[in-house]
Image (cartoon, rainbow, N blue to C red):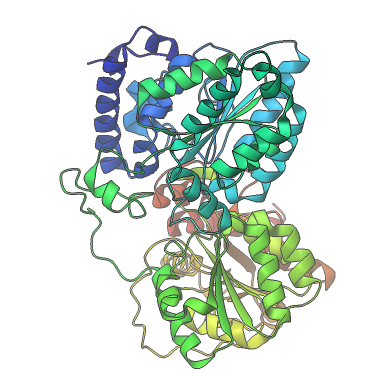
Length: 629
């Protein structure tokens, strides 16, 4: 087994191309085996096995640095940088991360998890190197999907102008999570269909050099002729016009070819783009056939590719997508927007039924928000579906372009709260805080998948900026046709009125709060429970009444406590001279680790048992104070 002999990248240097190809096969088998058990980003990592081996065999010095954009494709990197024996712990609590992480390994040059950051980070590392007078190699590996993000353009603009020694590997697999869209994707497709470009460019240079006496001078000085010839050969010269030397497109699965190209790059002291074409899911037929399905996947049968997930109730994502498509059938002004994730956000049905009213902007969340604002200004009813963690990337546009102008954009924030194995880069644990303080913003959270359709319909009727945040995965199995109390702006749903303790629960935490209330009744403590529905505007009438009636108020939210719903309740009580004891339960001032969702809820104290114990402890302290102890 070759893999057993690879403890760091320098161990690759003594392997022949044939041995590297054999190692690639071993690595693919290892990745498939572990991901089938743990879940993870399978197709992206399978697509970059040969590319990774080529990169790390040429640039294997301890100071050479590689920044992997997003990190979905970095499993091979982990396997050959000292984490082979821990790879079975991938994405588990206490195990290795699914993404490059500086605290995990010195070979992880920069922590990642969101798209379009690699060129910025690699340029910063290269400039730091230059200031130290060093010459080691710095490389960014970025996909063609991630290159549509604005930050990538900004970094390329500076990197090309800087002239510093930097390699940007464009991993072109025609996909991000879903099929890539936009003009840049079309541009790369044109380049891929011109494999004769580099050969023809070299032929032209050879012809010019063969002209007696003047050929060399012509090649060196006739830049206008060179540019003119180049423009005839390719559909654009964008990278070279921005200051990069361009090499490619090359077969990203041909290790020998990539190694040869990298050795040429090693001699250059300038910004270089190496454009490689790879196949997402390479070497595993189910992933090659369905790269979107295997981009990020749960456990599966490695022999067939079939999911091992049990039959569950519909997911929040599915319910959202079906509801929006149904509402759009009745209202021609409803439009849907996503940032490269129509399947992930549940919008595939909408796209199929209303293609003219569907907009996929690519990995460009800031643009998506401003586009939604302008559609609203144009009289439409935009619904922008994003993962909560990615909506953070459009914060300025939410504040400035939507809320400042009070435009009726509906934000459907999927993956709100703790998402599980993807860890801290993907938890949607901050949205209630970063949205609550923005004027004009309304924030809702459904207690279950049955309440989500009502909230979406209500949000479209409010005629104001509104966010609905809901968790990842399956609902609780409620009857979708069961009657549900109508949604009234700023009003909570009281589940149980009587009790010494008043639970004010947000979204999916209502289930745990209700169970905790039942546990309290078992020890003689009665508890009222409210499904708050609205984080903003809060039901201040209910909060005020319960503050005067209850012995203790308990807020429960799957969000960081700083600036969240509980903070809002505390502010209201203080501002209105209400001295009711308050216990705020949520996520502390920390980035929560990776692990199964149930494990993480236990970790942060949001299970029914942990809530019950915290309330018991608080009540004892209140009684001690009351008794003068």
